[in-house]
Image (cartoon, rainbow, N blue to C red):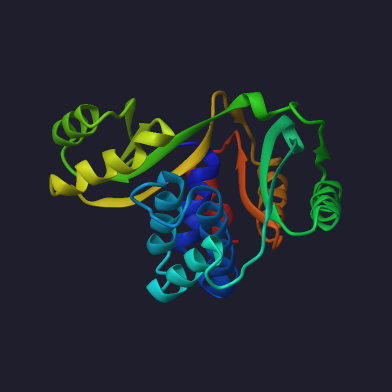
Length: 247
C-alpha cells in the first residue's frame, strides 16, 4: 500500500475525519453529483458513480444524502455543474503530488491550491509534470485467507493482490473494481473499502526530517473545499507514520 494510502487509513482510524464529518460528506456528495451528471444516475450502469457511492457508504454517509446528491447530478432537483481540474506539483523531498479538484470557480481553486503549495514548502508544476507518474486503478481492501482472496479476486478480473498487514490490497482496472468487489463479498470475504484511485508507479522514500513537511502539505490540500482527492508517491515507514499521527 502506498504511503499516502497508509496515512489516510491511520487518520481515519484515529478519528481525525470525525471532527470534519460535515466537510467530508460535502466532498463525497460533490463527487456523487459530478459522476451522476457525467454518466447518469444509475450506479449499475455507471461504474464511476457506483465507486463514488461505495466510498460514501464506507464513510457512513446517510443514504438520504446519497440519494439527494444523485438527484442533483441528474438535474431532478437543480444542482451545480462542477469543473474537474487536475493540479500537479512537488512536496518537499521531491515527492510528486497530483490533486483532483471539483469546483464551480476555477480562479478560486487555482489560487487556493497554489497558496497551499507555497506556504508548505512545495511547488506547483506545469500540466504533465507529475501526472505520468500515476495510473488510475481500483483498490480493494479485503480480509480472509490468502488462497481464497487470491483465487476469487483473480477469477473476477483483478490484476494483482498484495499483503498489507492484517488484510489484502486487491488491484484492478478502474472498470473492474465494482465486479471484483462484489465477487469478494459474494464469496463471504469481508471488504473493508473499495475505490478508484491514482496509484503511483514509483515511490519516493521520505526521512524523519522531511516527512512532517510532506504530510502538512498533503493535509492542507485535502482541507480545501474544492479539493476532492490528493495523490502522492511518498513512502514513509509505518512506525514513523504512526508516530506522526500521535503528535
